[in-house]
Length: 294
Image (cartoon, rainbow, N blue to C red; front, side, top):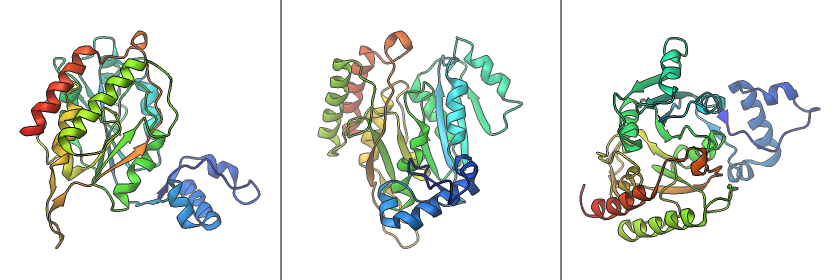
């Protein structure tokens, strides 16, 4: 079983420090057991320290476009999370050398599923391709640009693993650290979220966040169409009215959605940020378009 890595650690007198620092499931299991024993299960659960089932598989879908400077580091960070993973990279016809880097990985890095688009289509199209290849129990979206920290996967997975949620959204606006950047960009995000909530009757705080986590049957049960950043309002609208099918005597029900605070190390445009004002107008269109029809 694999626990969340915690900032609270036992003393070196109690447990071997080398074991605590290791990323192996066995060492992580020792740490979580020590924490639960000493802090109590209820306290640990509130801190996001809990047991992740050994048989759980997380599909990490990473859309990639011109990220040669960060691709190796994001893969290192994703691999470091102590959860069984299927890592899916979808290159959306990169032009900066990223495509060649990924081609070189195909024969040597067997833990990766790498797919290439023959022409640039946009983030939404790359995610559709990635979702189609997902085989894990849970699916998470991960950008390749280091704005979001994969170390937060355990907190994001917790409501689904504990049977409380079918979908989890991160939120950059409810209590975690974030890089201070552009006021108007933040205001645009919040205005789009408010408009989305108006049509979906949800109370999300950050509809545009990257970190979205789904039970696989949910995301593969939704037909997505948007090719660019319209993915965010489209998937939100469709999840808001998605009916989880009946299973094992359980009746069909509306999708249960949770929000979890996430940290955010945002880039500015000089550092390669891609979303722009045109995407904002496209998001407005998609909010209204998918509020009424699929």
